[in-house]
Image 1 (cartoon, rainbow over the protein chains, first blue to last red):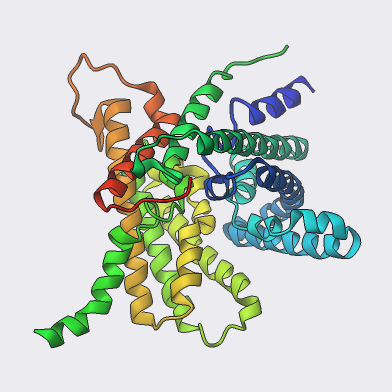
Image 2 (cartoon, chains in turn cyan, orange):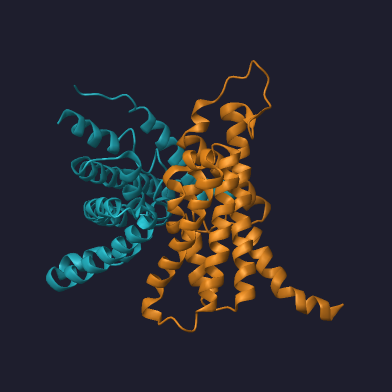
Length: 193
Length: 208
């Protein structure tokens, strides 16, 4: 139990998937122009990442049993695309309000590398089912924290910026992310028990 | 003279677009995950660069070949399957021939699938153009990507380990910059690199 809790905390803070493993950068940079959109994208990612990791884990065990781990990549990406598609139809049919709130974020998630990365990480690190579920949820929450922080800082920069021309727009985002990543390194070695 | 120019213009333009004017990383800011994550060693950057170049070229060629057959509703799924097939090929090739590099790249090889450059070129170029141009376009984007990766990794490996391609460059008194090997170093070096290239090519964004 204690180990699982520490895995959860470390996947949010010291092993943050965006700021320590540098994953999911394209949407992180593209959608962090304001906090409202960042929140929408963050929640959608938490939802999809946790769901696909939980679905992919038993499928991977099946592939191991069949001795067919070579095609794991194709299977994972197909599961992810199918899950996103299904989720979209499901929300559209039963929760139209939520569907409108997620809007364009859902289809964009298929190309968010966090989703596939979480599935590849549990393979690489031999996680059990519970660890996979905790790790995927924690990583997704960590990603949401990162995109909301970044969006807040970018909103401030927009109003009081005196940037060199070459850094305007996406250039400065890298420096902001670098400083955020340095700050998150400070969480290394955090322990509760 | 004029005749020759006309025949070469399209090839030349596609090439130039990928390498500088439309460089996938510097100008369009796509495919940054791997550009940041694997650039702490030059050898990793080279392996990743060639892997991605191969996947872009092969999948662009394939998609361009069957571009008139795929129904437009199913095209994304078809692209995904084609791209992941070639990614598995790259991953197997690295595993068999360069096991050490494969180890240190880890899951990032599999993540070539979700590298937005590959999908971006498939959707924006290969789906609308004949095979020969799709191949050149793939090569140009891939080389533009490799060029950025290698440049960033040279700076990072030099400062983080004092070496380039495992050959010692810095003197014995050099203190390695630990942060350079980790995520922040990647962000800062790539940020500086993008700044430099944007000033050189005079490509500025107007909105923040």
